[in-house]
Length: 351
Image 1 (cartoon, one colour):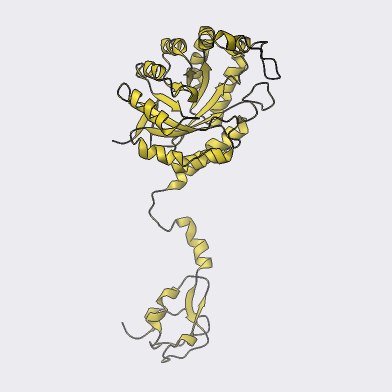
Image 2: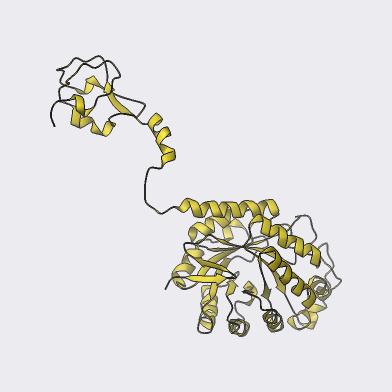
């Protein structure tokens, strides 16, 4: 069985272009119009999808965590609960974002952090569901979302292989439309902790699942490396301005970065080729200039039996190639040659 998945209208398998998700999260700062602008810019940059996050804050957190003081430069409230509520979108915003995404032609979906949020997104008929790294051990939520029978993307930050296997085994009997993303839950993640080779490990361990990379690192190069290793989904945090207030802004890509990442991923796909070594038309002129041919080392008379010292190897390469040297030594010239004249089989005796 070939690993594949449909995300929105896009079919993804090992031969595909990379599917790029611009993770907006809460970088919209609770502003609907700003979020719509981010959708539009992500589309212009070449992203396939945009994603935000949905939480039912009152039931998701303990009372102590909800009421915990949360006053610092990135806070939008005096308590953690107030902060989260300020950033949270409801039915009005989600309905408008869904409409707008359809209008501009980009796939929109969200991460469900709890049962109520999953049901909320299901009521909106979201085309894809995302499960964050923190919920890979939340088997009840994974099963609940799997029953929606929509493509399910799971991040694996902080997980062991046992955690990933447990999640996979819980989901697959219910819904085989699963993608697994290698992820390191540092914000930002250090390069020495990205462990991109896990992408290959996942591909071997889960041959029916599309594998991807949720990139929390700074920059764009690791996305290309992940694609080369077999990732076919790249999720990258996105913002319009690094200096905006918010915990994720600093390591998110600005538009120029997202545009370059998409460009490089598409170039990499095209550059893979088919594995057949060949000469391309664009190479012929440069190679003719650089390669070499067999020519007369000095004036030679007809009847001369060629010796190695009678033959020179010089550019351009528009004559007999040097690998034919052994086939002409010891043969006799049928005509005179000036220095640098081409030596060809036609002017030699013998077969």
